[in-house]
Amino acid sequence: MNWLHTSLILLLVFLVVFAQGTFDGVRQVLGVQVDLLPSLIVYASLSSGLPTLLLVAVAGGLWFDSLSANPLGVSVLPLFVVGLVIQRYRGLILRQQRIAQVVLGLGASAAVPVLTLLLLINTEKPPVIGWFSLWHWVVVSVAGGVATPVWFGLFDRAMRALSYRPWGQTSFRPDRVIKRGRA
Image (cartoon, rainbow, N blue to C red; front, top):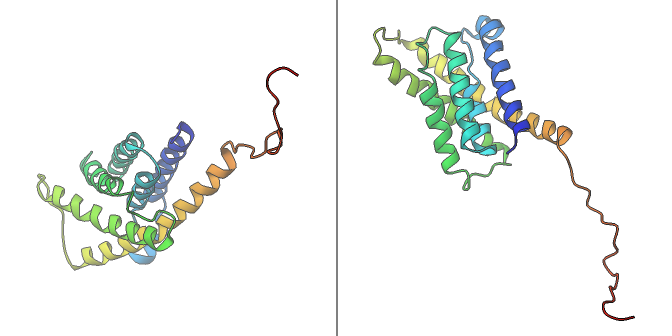
């Protein structure tokens, strides 16, 4: 779209990653740290171009990995792949429908941990997987599905408040007659 939109998305990605790494309230209540980056990838892929999607996936993935136990860069590819698939079919997706936003957020938030797990299994230190991993996956998926419409509403309001809106009126009447030639 424009530089303001991309900057706002990247700022929110940074704030979300920082909040996920800093605040433990949700982790203490549910026993799971939610990941809202896939829901932001859904917004970026439906509202922006490929450069913005790539920036969000790379920056968000690296920021997330730097604050987690993941090897650096392992989250970038799953975020980008999910965003690329959504962007590829965004002409078929009803972007303004809340139920479509929830379903896409739920699907992306379910797919990113699975793809990340597939990458982590192939590293030197494989992750610990148990029954609690299923609970973690369900909570992260539901949280991403709930958060996705929030991002759409938040960015729609921000862009309405910060963007230029052209004036719909002109100084000329539509029924005005212009005489050309010699008078």
